[in-house]
Image (cartoon, rainbow, N blue to C red; front, side):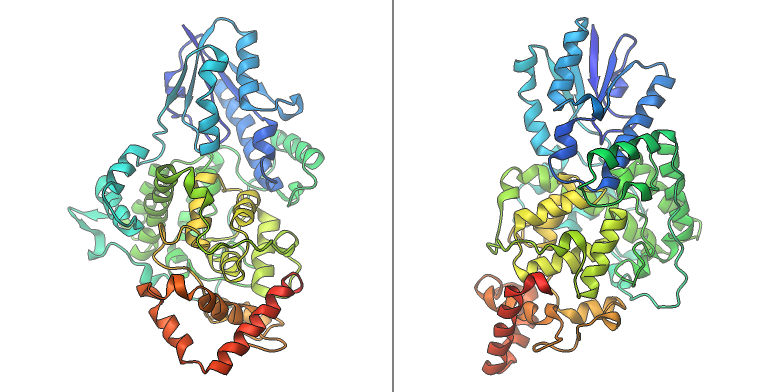
Length: 507
């Protein structure tokens, strides 16, 4: 009996569970659909990446003798269901639909209705590209009062054997994060990530995106990302040799006009299937074993993959759909427009947003401690921030974006993911970057004309949320500092913060 095998746009892996079931006579279906391209205002580079990678993947399947039905965006297919139903009506010999589980909750829920609508069986296979299945994560989480990534990460190290010395972690410690918090010297040589030339398929997609999505953030003409597994692997291996040796030491650093520093820019490839997480970890571990990178760099990178990435995916599926609606601080203030255009006097915000606009990328500290931290301090809308992060980054899919935004950046889940809010004043930004010395605001000033907005907003955030945070063990030092301030100083700070929130759009 012939099958229709549906491949989603983030499932571009030759070893995909559903593709492994392919037999002669089966038909593979891929579609660039309006609903997926437009449910948020995706960055132009993200749309080029996904559509071009899909077209290249379809071409590689055809080269292997696999028949592929492919709907391009110009064919105006509104939804994946329409693509499936249309194909089945044209191919009556196809008796069932087979696919690998969708990564996002909204789409997975939509697919549950397909058997009744199509009047054909729909088989959904687990996505074993991830190391931890959703069931494995549920077993780990069962009975725990707190879901802390560090303990899950240790289980993943034991499970995979990565950076293990028998039953003990390599080097005697599980985590070398303490060694990974240095600011980057201004005169340090910064190798750029490898760029990939645009081929004819990508050029066609760029023309499409410029015509159909010109109102979205970004400029499709500057696209230079990998769109095939072969090129993504080459880009990653270049990172391992060029940037990884110093990734650990400077992974939290920020530098003026340097969007990439020592980061791999590989999550966008991994999240659509062009890279495999096991292969990546093996290459990083091999570089350490061969003495090419230090342990803190190898461990820090592997922790992001088998620790953080697998953890947030497990948490997402454990807690959805309720997780998306959590708003611990009742944050509802509208996003200032500079989140879209970057025209702000706050140098750190301008840098993070400009990097995002240019590359559909900024690294994790810019996301967490600049754009996310500012949103947390200012009480910006959780829903709007989730849509913004999902829209503007090429690596953003809801399963990974939502826990990072609501849990890590905004503490909207009240501590399910993180043990404390990642709130910080301008002092942190000054310590980890050279932004402040190029800013029109004064980082050492708390109130008055020219004071860094992060400072008053930080203290005001603590004050207005004291009833929710004062008992948090990791917030005790901050509250001790706040309580030591004279009453008139506290009031002056809160008054100035109120002024900032009124003129938020003009900062």
